[in-house]
Structures are given as structure tokens and as C-alpha cells.
Amino acid sequence: MNFDPRHLIHALKENVRRVIVGKDEAIELTLIALLCKGHVLIEDVPGVGKTTLAAALSRSLDCSFNRIQFTPDVTPSDVTGFTMYNAKTGEMEFRPGVVMTQILLADEINRTSPKTQSSLLEVMEEGQVTVDGVTHALSRPFMVLATQNPIDFVGTYPLPEAQMDRFFLRVSIGYPSIEEEMDVLDRFSGPQSPLKSLQPVCGAQEIIALQELVGTIYCSREVRSYVATIVAATREHPALQLGASPRGAIALVRAAQACAVLAGRGYILPDDVRRMAHSVLSHRLILTPESRMKGISAQAILSQLIDTLPVPGAKR
Image 1: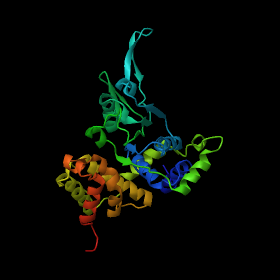
Image 2: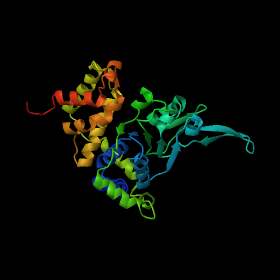
Image 3: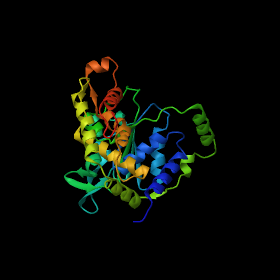
Image 4: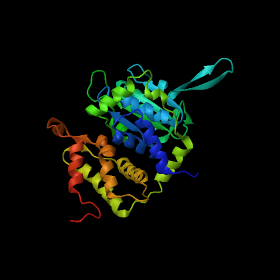
């Protein structure tokens, strides 16, 4: 397929920016996850555009889209699907759940039970669903965009470590500046939401081609060593009960490769690793109880490690 990767990525970014104002970093991180076949946890306070960001990306892609609003009464079969007896044919039939799509918005994922949360584990890792012993493959590309509110803990179920580790990266949006908020008010004060006017600018095959391109980006031995050193340091840090997994290390290299694609390079720079480390690793780290009592954050620990560990090729 002949296509210009940077032009395509720019078109996607600009399309989402028609709705999301002043949050280029959040948009780029979400696109990086898409290019890396990864899933995104969008975590922030209510009303800053978590669901809007997910919806804008889905509308920019010519892919199937489903949304599920997680509540305590949502069951695993609502997510994965179920088999039932068809009296007309005399056979068992599979009734697909919401996960049988290409882009899935899992709204307020921490408001459903751990059992329902775990129904996403297989599909997020392997791109398939197994129901009653029968495996159903999902269409490519496949991406889960999950949102959660980190402030309101009433009626929520914290995501287990295994679930958090399957999110490629975590994104925070943050409040807009005064100028940005004025722009938001201008765009959303008209007769129709700008979200409804978005049209797809990219198809499934183009996304798959971009995903395959990411894997061709060169990663030197020095950069691989740098990533392994950062990950190993998280496992040895006294303030952390659990450090980053090998899955996290692989994700960090992959994210750095996608950064290089966005920059039009065929190789990774250490700066790509440094840029992506917080978004890819921080949600995978578990603080010790003492660290939590002292108010230490995983982001602060990562910043300390990145600032102190030697950078390949840097002058000393």
C-alpha cells in the first residue's frame, strides 16, 4: 500500500483537534497507542473530555465502534457475548457482546465488578473472545479506550494489577486554559456538536499498515539497554512494592518506535524513551503502603529514575 504515514497521522490528529481543544499531547498519546495495537486508560476528573476524546478518535476511523457504560449490574456476558439455543434451527448460536467490534469505548470501567472487568483480559491481550469453549477472533484493528474518574471512589472497584498491565498507556487530559475554554464554549455553543460533523479520514487497512510500519523502526542495543535499565530500576526501588513487568518494557520500546514514526524517523532516540516512560510505566507501578502514606507518587519516582540514570550518547 502506497501512503504517506506522516500525512495520514497528521490528518487523524487534525480531525480529532476539531473537537478536542488544546490537548495535543493527549491526542498524540492516544494515536501512539493505536499505532502500537495498544489500549488506553483515560483517567481524569469528570467533564474534561475523556469520553469526547474516545468518540472523536472513533469517528475519525472508518471502523466499527461500540460503547458500553459500565455499572455494577453489567455482566461478563454483556461484554463477551453468550451462546443460546435457537428453537427454530435446533442449534446453539453465539450472540456477540459489545466487545465484538474494532473500537470499544469502556466508559467508567471502574464502576463495574472485578468479574466483569476480568472479562476484558483475554480480548485486550489476544484480540479474541472465548465463550463456552469456542474462540471468536476480533477484526483488526482492535482497541479499547477505557475511562475512569480517579477522584470519586464511591461505588467503584479499583482495577487489578493484571488489568492495569494490559493498558498500553494511561492518558490524563487536564483542565483547559482560559483561552482554550473560550474556544470550547464557542465550538459547542452552536446548534450542533462538532463531534457529530466528524467524518472518517482513515480506514482499517491504513491503520494496519501503520501498525506494521511501527515494528520496522530500528532500536539500537544501547536504547534497549536503556529501557531495560529503567524497568529494572523500578523493580529495585524501595518505595515500590511492584515494578514494571516485561510487558511494560516491550510497550515502552514499542511506544518509542511510534514516536519515531510520528517524527518521520526510522530509528529510536533516547528522548523517545524518556518522553513515553511516564505514560507507559507509571500505571503499572504499585507503591508500598509507607510510600502512599507519605504522599509519594509513581510519577515522581519515575522522574527521579529518568533524571539519574545515564542516557545513551549523552555527554557527561
